[in-house]
Length: 115
Image (cartoon, rainbow, N blue to C red; front, top):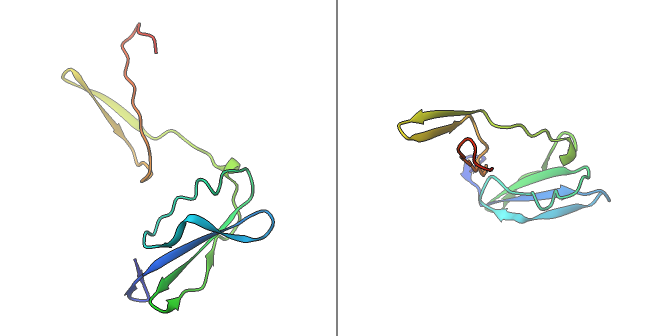
């Protein structure tokens, strides 16, 4: 990650919770990874905002915050685009664009078998 032409030391993520207080995203403190999994912190159907700032040496950026709060109950999940092709006695399963952290499980059964 580059910030102001220099390699970042870390990022810090915080969540704004219902009572108006910012709290640290537990797994996302002083991390060098530009991605952060806040699934646990977003576990309730509440309105959340998220902010992040970067640190590079002694310099710390200003907080950057979401433009509007979000709520997980408003998230629409859709099935990924998928194609299946017979190749000899095997099946080739291909997916369209998947998120980086997708967990895909494919189950195959023969006609007449119980699922």
